[in-house]
Length: 146
Image (cartoon, rainbow, N blue to C red; front, side):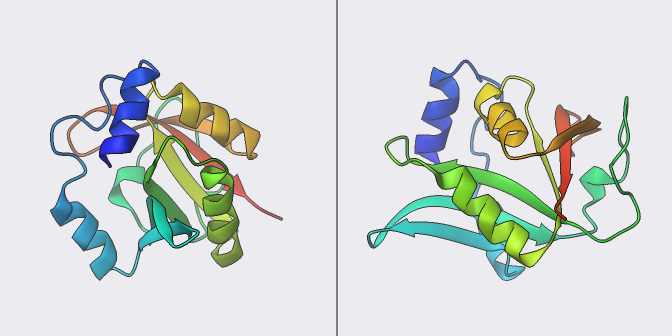
């Protein structure tokens, strides 16, 4: 998580994942829900992500837009974190996620240009704005694979 925070800071994203977020308690809660995953490369853990089933209350209301589909169940991807020296992590995570559910939602901070680039590159559509529990704004995306 610290490596991911460093990447964010270096890319100009100073306002996402501040202080102790994501905390150990949050990561443990992901795991208790069987939704916390690691990516390994040559026996080394190089990334973490959460892949959780709907409903997610954060996604109940969307502003200045609409979900591509607001009826079918979906999964959300949260807390993608990796070391800066590994590549292809986002693609590997998306391959895993879409193998389990064709309907994926994800959000990111307005300043997280790296994530926005990856989302568009991997076929996600920008859907609007959501607000997380703290009241902070996030850009919301969805992709429904054929």
